Amino acid sequence: MFKDKITLTLIILNIILAALVGILLQPYPLSSGNIGESAPVVNDEPEHHSDAAPENGPSPIKICLDPGHTIGTGNGNRSYFGESESEIVWIMTLMLESKLTELGYEVIKTRSDPYQEMTLPERSKIANNFDADLLLSLHCDLGNQSGYAFFVPDKPGTNEDKTGPPSEVSKRSRELAEQLDREIKQVGPIKSRGVKSEEFTYAGNLQGALTISIYAEVPIITLELGFLDNEIDGPFLASAAGKILWVETLAQAINEVFKDSGARSEASGKR
Ligand SMILES: [Zn+2]
Image (cartoon, rainbow, N blue to C red; front, top):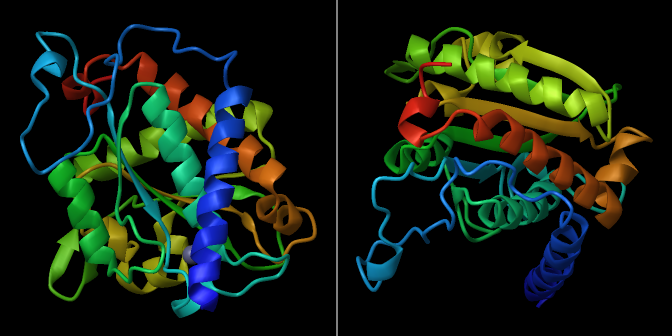
């Protein structure tokens, strides 16, 4: 079937891209010992991890990656240069997961199936239960512009009867986004549009913040990777080389931001 073909193509592409990213990033070893040496696999069953039990060392930093939308449904499926938003962010999430795991981070995704439909509150809940140091939601923009932008909840919003996020989550989200933007824009594969408040998005304007942020109890950043319909950004995001370069840049930026923050427990709050 068509869907199976896409799945197979995505899997093969992912393997090739992950291997390429691994090779490309060889010259960037983890430069500090702050992050745990090996990221334990997140697993519900408590089994055979006896020799991997950490003693008193710092816990690995926990990153929850959210590939926006769902392949095949919804508004993430418009394609301008060969790939839709949901396909681009799914592939880049897998590449980033692989790179960050290699760097010693503990990484989970909000969903493990590219076709799995999932509400925004469900996505936040996974990051909350994981007690993530960062929930990073990947998207691509549409509109007559070029560049990436970070969106953060500077103030609480309300969705149904839920109001959030808490002010410390807002503060930490902005702080992390500004640090990431500073790192990325020095070398950025595409230009920075900076860190923006979610109030200026469509949903944020209606609710005060994006839905995923309203339900987040951990630092939450939405990254719009570029404009799908733009002549520069679109082909860049749809190409393997563009994705590799973006993921490499993003992983290094995350590592720069978190490597000095020490143990996970210290990462949220003081800096
Ligand atoms: Zn989107």
